[in-house]
Image 1 (cartoon, rainbow, N blue to C red):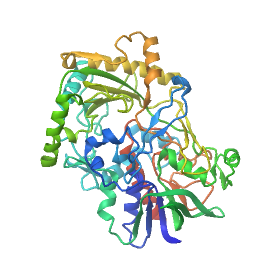
Image 2: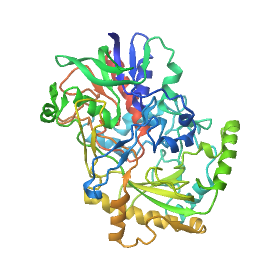
Image 3: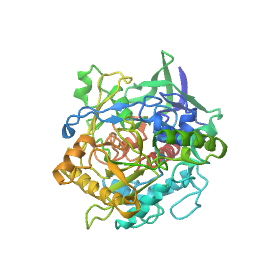
Length: 529
């Protein structure tokens, strides 16, 4: 049995940050376990490679939900990164923290020490923003944050259209205010993806006190009594045990961290017994409180080769752009697709934006799994604080089997009503003069106008925007899975550190918050050592 002080399960955004920070202490023996392969692929480092990673099973768990009752029994797609860097190795690279009040909500709900003033220093410590240091941004951290090197002309046209539609411009969504439209900053460096693995893990892989196991699937946490003592994994077809003298940390994401807890005997007792699992601790909250941003996309065909698309001219341009990227690390291949966007209030009187927009310089249909001839653009709109709550449950007691994912999209009527307002807002922006100057055809919804028709369209095509959270909620109440230092209640020597710990979903993209959670977990553990 290999013996370590700390075993971290999951080499994603939080896990990479956590393992790297823990291993700064040479007296700690740290092991990071990742089920997928390394991130050593041009599809990962080249930003536009996400167009092939997201819709396929290449380094991607490619989960599906159970049928969604409020959406005509559709099964929705849930891609998640299966490699070092996790979803930071296949996402759209948007650097976003959410609204400051989101974190104050956590603190008010019992997550003591997680208010905005508490978490901001950890965001700053993680960040190296190429714009320079300020009250809102850090320099010198592992995570490089940059402006896009070659923004598409249509991204700027979207911003202009948003202004024409009455929205304020915003040059920094992580600055003094979140509301408005603008270009996103991205986790890139020199035109390449800067994932959590690239930022945190690669520079320290040579540390003698850090072991990184890839293609190693964790099966369960091992206990002596109620104390976690290690992890059972399967690697190259053989079962192995990794001992943890101090702590085990699950950083496997909002789907697989609760799955691993349940496979290890921590979860809703009756459900675990029904699968033949021994109950270590009956914790009904494990796998509950699943939250995700329900997202709708309006697509429009536009005959401009400036936009991504499928055509002979587009193919010829792509060949030139590949050569440009090889030589300069600039051009179309540096795009994160969702180059622009915004945060908007769909109703008067709201204290903070309730909708987020992602403007994409190509048509995005069914997570890029359905392609259309020609060129075009698309605009996502998602509900930032949905009221619907779902679950993650076990399909079996084997952690290698995909869990049962039920986000219960649109179960609460308010979520649907907010998307209807968002649909109308996106239409208003796309019809503004800056974009209306280009002849366009709207896919699927050209003849959709009244609220009833919009509702049917939303139920037929809404899906995830990849921001799952909440399934191992931290808090101060007995029903919380974790305490505010991310320790699993009812047992010893076990923590969780990823987006599953969020009491409520933040209003924005979740990669930067996941990294911040990993940073904080390392601080808690170093303090306890």
